[in-house]
Length: 329
Ligand SMILES: [Zn+2]
Image (tube, rainbow, N blue to C red):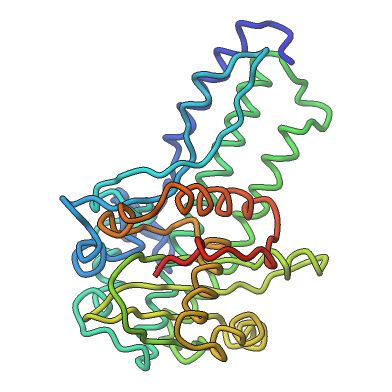
């Protein structure tokens, strides 16, 4: 509760401002660039998003931030997930690179024919996912920090003793820093062209283009089992040349971990294989976009089930939850 009710409204203003906070420095591997950042696509717009798009828009799942303006001190409304139509120019973007570095670093995967047996292509697809994840984590930590500082400046909390807000911001910074260290490993490998230092497994499936995703994650069921988890997996799924490319990648030292996690998918076939991939995506990949023409065919029950599963798995495991409505191919 707020000591001064007016401060609650000021806080809401501070939260909106903090949504504008982005990482401020080019994430190129030498960390010396001072050029202005642009919106980089974590999923290619010209070759992939446009295949999914209708009227230049795709569907994504996002948090409904309107709950913040509707919230009052007596009736706080928690953020909930919703479907959102978004322009392909804005979908999957992150601010983390300047124009020159975005173009230079990723040119091979932006202009060459993609080949999942090409180590450089696999490396660059993964590297871009890592940069997007780092940029997102910096942004989220910055939001929590500015919320904490504005509460402190309004005198609602003391800066001298630990508070939930302060601890939360510190945890998010720690998580962003951990991702930064992970990204530094990729920087070194990129600079020495050590593209073989990644392990990958892929599938090329038949089927219509229905969605695309790009994410780096530590699966929750693994995170729950250990004190400290630094293994990370990367997944990129996208329609390409009339097929659906499914690429899993990680550092060589995490290969055992990746094999274990996707084992069931590679043993499965046809419908069940795609069902398992669907579940993996909805459980781990926030950065997913759907084709509007496919989304329109979903029943209300399917839309609700997917939204609820997407939301619930942000906070819990739900590995054993089964529902045919989770199928997104
Ligand atoms: Zn740059």
